[in-house]
Length: 230
Image (cartoon, rainbow, N blue to C red; front, side, top):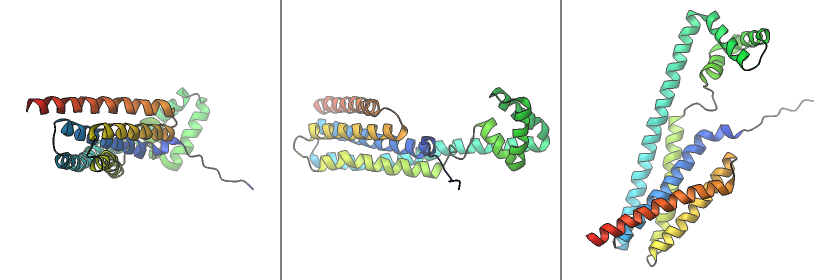
């Protein structure tokens, strides 16, 4: 008896993985940087926490709105291309089939076999075949604005909560504690994201940690400078 087998590839998670990692990374870096910048300006512990909470809410909403608009624009472009392809199929189906046949020939199929493949695929789902192989649009990689917006906002809030909670329980030595724990969070996030995407874990962790440290250091420096001036 034949057993059904379905391989799960990492490209199936590329949409939500990208939005989730970007959101969590942004949440940690921006909130930790904000907390460190305000703390370096000699603000009170209460002011630091208020700034952190405001940064969490504003950042989550900004991520959701930005991701939704960006991905929705991609979805609109995909739909416009599909509408144009449907119109072209109605006006000149043989010409479109020849175009698809040429694509398969360029990929290495014999012309006769390529024509047979096109005939069978277009008989089953003409627009699907053209969308996938001519336009590069597939169900796996298609734009999903709502999913991307929710993933970005939720992951940003989770990421931002980490340095914020650390700041809430660390009134003494706030700057070294928040910066140190945030770098640990970033390293873990980078490693997990790299593992989920099939990339080297160490490289992913170091890349995220380096840029996070740079952002936090610069923001703390600005806070220290303006706090001294004011």
